[in-house]
Length: 193
Image (cartoon, rainbow, N blue to C red; front, side, top):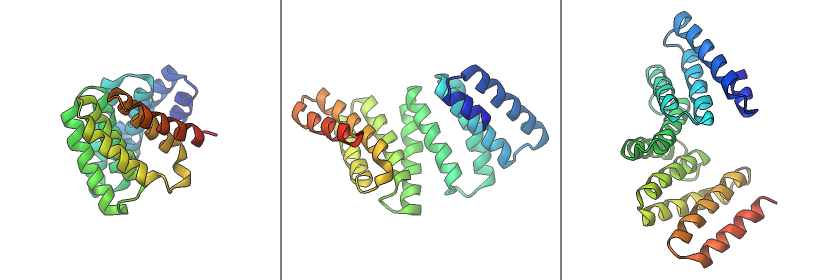
């Protein structure tokens, strides 16, 4: 996990090198193991933070394949990885693939934790990004509103709620709804205090 620490400090080249070396060792010593899956996931995370979407997509795909072979389809590690792969697919412009994956992950989170979990909110937020990127603003707005309803009563999720409020405000501004957008921006700013 040192690679994650290095990435957080902005030392992406060192983080990537370390993550690649540890994954290579695990591919050889423990192929198909949880350790190999976790290291592929960490490499993907470093690559995503570095801005290398194509390689992040490949590493998340490897990690997801490993998690799928190791765990039940509803296992939280598998779902978290699938969510992050979906977000990477959005960034890479692969909106149809992202939508299919994120819809599946959202349905699984909903079944596992109910309609009010932070995990579900994160995946729905990413799904709203798919619709926003496609210009399907009414669908994106509806999902943003659902995410806000989920996150509002969860004190530990104030940061994510502020991010979602800002995202919906930006969408509303593009639709010419400046008054509602300003209200959401004020609400987001208040959460940051």
